[in-house]
Image (cartoon, rainbow, N blue to C red; front, side, top):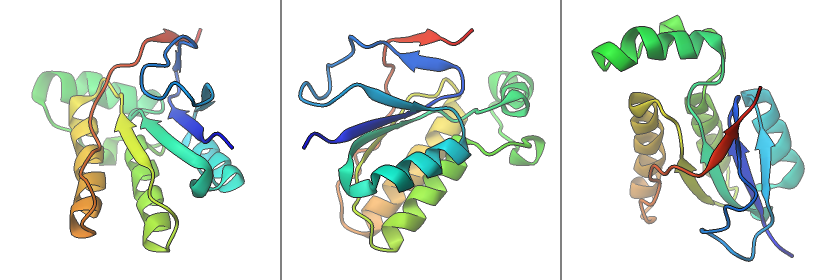
Length: 147
C-alpha cells in the first residue's frame, strides 16, 4: 500500500508533476487549515503517511503579521495571529508522536522564514531529543495559487 503525502497550505496547491521526492507515492492530499490537517491525519493515520509539507501562515491575520513584522523587522508575534498556524500543526503532530504515533518525514515550504525556522526547530528538536535524524528542512515545491 502506497503511503500518503499531506500538503498544508491555505492558498497554494502543489503541481501534480512534482514527483521529485518520492516517485512511488500518490499525489498530495491538500489541507487548508489546522482543523482540516488534524481531521485528515486522524482519518488516514500517521502510520499511512510518508511525508507532510507545512506552510506557516494559514489566514489573513498571519499574512498581515508577515507583511507588518516578519518581512520588515524579522520578528514574529504570535499574539497578532488569530487563526491557528502551521506551528500549531507542528505542535499537534509532536503531541501525537509523544503519544506513540509513528514519526514521519516533515518538510516546510512556507515563505515566512521566521515561521519556517520555528517549525523546523520545533520538529528537529523533538527528533534530536529522541535520537532521530534531524531532517526537517525547508524546500520550495512547484505550486499554483488558489484564486
